Image (cartoon, rainbow, N blue to C red; front, side):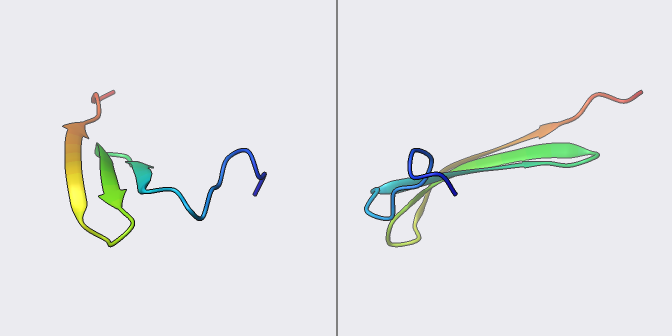
Length: 45
């Protein structure tokens, strides 16, 4: 990974999963606590 995209000392991490039926995203604290999450259905077709 590029040093510009990853910071091991960051307080938060953002994750995004783009799947075939839905998109999931979340913000997680350094201690592993999920601070916010979102799930959206993808469009059919």
